[in-house]
Image (tube, rainbow, N blue to C red; front, side):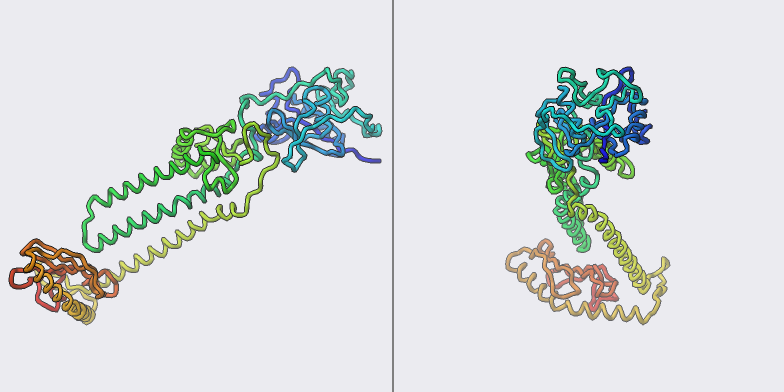
Length: 517
């Protein structure tokens, strides 16, 4: 004896005398689920099969409990055609048994060409009610009213009070009432809306696209700032202005990137397009540039909420909206969702590169933490070395008496000798520059003005300048750790006096191999 499988269908209707605001919380409690989940996962897609089983008595027990809560459910046999999705009001409903669709069509509640799609398929086709051929009647011990009325499932009722598959065409059933406040809005659920991790992957790719040029520009500014500082220049307010302009450009660039792309023809940034999602209004329409602008700057509020909860709401709410989506009344949906077209029936799987993009930010954060630790260790090591070098210098006390603070007098003498040898090696190059500067002054009456590099590792930069007749040659020593600390970033300057070059230096004269003030 064949066993007939049945499905318990939640129609989304409430029984006469009941109030929907009380029925659905009671039904959620009966099913032991959160009311919000009942609304998002069941009512948003009603009519929908909530239970399929070979045990008819068990399904009738569930039906009785739903009836006590005030919800209308129906029992339907699952035939060889199985279950299908139905497009009602341009919104996918179900899945429901094909026999349920046939009943609705025969009763006149739905047109015979209503669009259906098999479970697991996104191909919609018209449903044509089969001819009223005699159906196989199940044995008495398995027989059930296929469209069992939930008004009083346990008691016999007149045939006119029951909803049957063979209902007369002139007695249409009540259509499923839309949820309060949902008219014109996209339905809730994971099939329509992109969740947190898919959006996070898209944002990671967009951040990478924007971050690379911004990082290069910022790195260049930092490099120029350090270069100016180590050369002894005073950049003044110029670098402050450049940093300010950089941050303004970063904000404006990010705003135009997101607003133009999300309000454009594809309704998506490159990251969103890669992930197959786009931004729409809550009714599925393309948004304007103004709304996209508001959505971008609303992210400031999203970022202000602690622990990233403002972003995480994109994984928790029915329409997967973060705070800025709620403020701008927008949704992030799958590419297949289009106004005036049937809704998809299946959720696209996450592509493999989406998971890679989700992992990358955490990898970068880990590498950044490691790099920061290495940098701090190097910095502290350099400060320790500097402290040892300072300890090797002779510092006079306030009374004018020299007290040696060197850890080793032999080490201090060795540094002094090394500096003198190194500076002696730059003297030929300086002498040649002095002759060149004197000739330029004699021939043009003006001082040579130039900045030059040197192949000598002790020299960081050479500057020729001054105002005639007081021409100057300034040698700025290198900041390299290859030379003793006492000579790093020091300055030695020669000034033309009309007959000779006078020397002055920021270094202790005891380190110089020639007389200098």
